[in-house]
Image 1: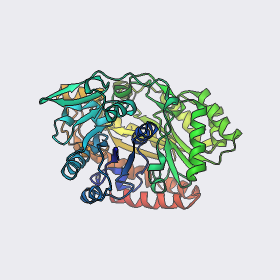
Image 2: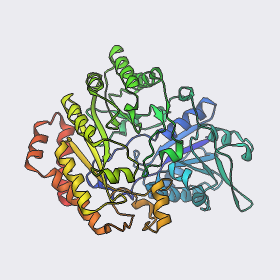
Image 3: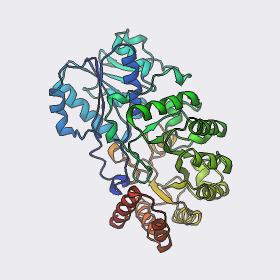
Image 4: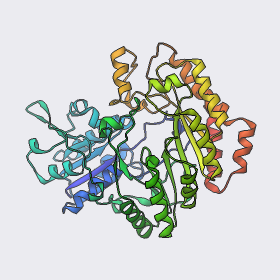
Length: 464
């Protein structure tokens, strides 16, 4: 075997409110899937271990590696910031059991903090940004200094090669190697799917928006690259025909950023009579009633809108350029179209006060989304907010596995961490335990997944 790719277990994320609510997702790592597909396309033998989906905890990883029939030459590990500590623990176990294998880390956290990752003695290489071609060149044995996007150690010094130019034609990439993944074990977050089996699909890379709390433009730049509708439909048909997939979670930051593209996608779903239900993310100003009606007809049943705050000054502080009046209208239109509407908000942004938090909660109640998610603002590495916090002495810690949206990491001059965390819990309880809201939810139960979602959610929020 040439390469083993590992998606580490999430076992330490016990403080994440989504885990407390028992509504977290378990979906394929598409980054690993694309890398595996590129390697296989070029004649390499690859295996994927999705430790979370396959219930391989850290304590069981050692035995898993010992049981491998062939020793991989390279082990690739992916990690976001909350999984960074676990990824390094995974690297240590890999090196202890298979010392001859070269360990490569990639993903968002490794991309924005390659120095810190390479400081770990168990990591040999970091691949920054898109990894399909860089990883292939590494496995092919290309000269290290010729591989764009690669960081590595040489004579005790960390070397960062030039960044690789972004892949502008995403259609040239093979579909993710779903056949190497435990498809039957995947599911979107509870409450966001109607049917199983379900997986996620990505239709673009990047985001033109510059929100200060997001690392997307640090990783990808502020240009958005689209896959063609034809390519997306081909992938969906492949998933339906080969794996019996019935539900798709479209993982783009903003799937609806181009109305014409959304309309084309929906028309193809209908024309080809694809039996599919799906969900997506959207900004509140990117679609209208016409698009919503067609999306519903084509199988869309759930849209999540990122609103974050109901205070215009805070929206300006975080560079979230949305119109709250449009948000009110679009949430109403989404529900009118028969699509479930989820709205997400954050507490603890720069400029936050008790008054602005209450203003946001009042807004969430007034606009009547089917469900609201309240997070605590988290200054992830690679974001302008992280740099702002470090420069001004507002960053409280870098305890990465507690960077999950339920704990304060910013010591704001306007509001104490205790106030933010207390209001965060209060907001969930107040929003969900209103009698009218409970009755509205009970009246909209459609299947056993809805029943499971509401039972677990209400029970878990009561315990917050």
